[in-house]
Image 1 (tube, helix red, strand yellow):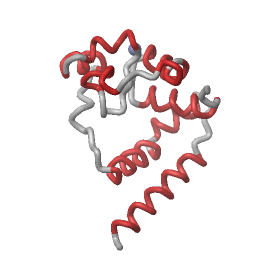
Image 2 (cartoon, rainbow, N blue to C red):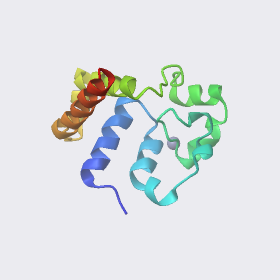
Image 3 (cartoon, protein in one colour):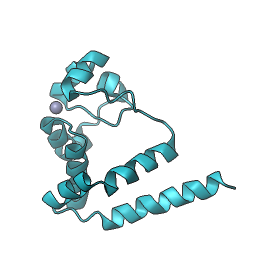
Image 4 (cartoon, rainbow, N blue to C red):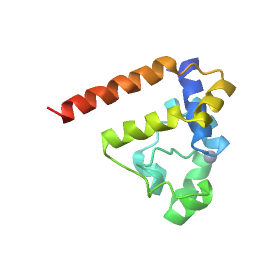
Amino acid sequence: MKYSDEEVKNFRVWGEFLKYPQCCIEWFCTEHYTERPEDSDYGVADGTGFLPCPACRSLCNTDQGLYNLLGRDIKSNQTYDIREMYKDTLGDMMSPRYKTIANKYDFDYTEYLNEIKAMWLTLNKEENK
Ligand SMILES: [Zn+2]
C-alpha cells in the first residue's frame, strides 16, 4: 500500500513546516509504509511526532542527539492531551507560514482543515457535557 498523492503533499507540508530533515521527510513519504520500524527504533524521538529515517535514527539515541539533529528542543512542547494537539494543529494551519508552504506544494488543505475543525468541536462538546 502506498500513500496517495494528497497524503504525500500533506506529509511534505508538515515536514517542512516542522523543519524536519529532508532525508527523513523523503523516507516517510516513500519507505515508511513498507519498512514498518518498531516504536523503540525511534529512540528518544518516539512520541514526539518526528519519525527519523534509518540514517538519522542512530542520532536519536539521546535527547542531545535529537536536539542537534533538529536544531531545537521538540520534547519540551510534547503533549499527550488530544485537545492540546488539535489546538496546536489548528493554530499552525491558520498561520501565514503554513499557507505559504501548502501553496508551494500545491496542497489544498481546505478539506483537511475542516476535518480538524470538526474534530476540535466534537472534542469540546464532549468536554462540556
Ligand atoms: Zn533523516
